[in-house]
Image: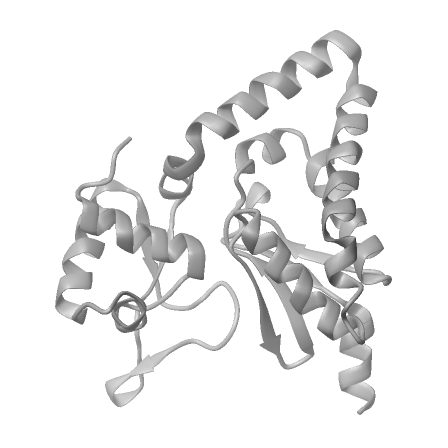
Length: 221
């Protein structure tokens, strides 16, 4: 599937990289007028690449005139998949073959090897973090460079790791071992237990990871 226009693709790319946003926020990101952005959003919604909701999948709900909530736009499964359809389809085919030929343990071994690669790649950069919260920010930066559009988001209970994009969302939906191994990798890199609150693979709008140690610290403070 192709996007309606180059301009619409840029809007979709902004949602991919920066996460769900209102039309005004997108206009600020892209340097366009809200009118131009809304025209592209209308086309993307009509084609099924983008959906509009009354609230974000996380964080505060934006408000516009007289208390009315501004619509928050986010990529649908089709919109996200349009950016990495070949890679994700290949991953599904490869893992399916691996499982049928060598069994589920082979899939798990692959998932753990992939997670180990992530740990080795990011271990040095995270070592510069003075504490868990600093390492969480560095982890988000590293994941963003890998195409996961990751950020940290402040909540009432402390910072959370949010991944707005997953290049292997369909593979992870079929083989949850990928998400499980990735969660274990996060724990190794941060040096503490983490809790996955939501995943794109399960149909959530964003992968959200909570760090209980930071939550407890904020609560006790």
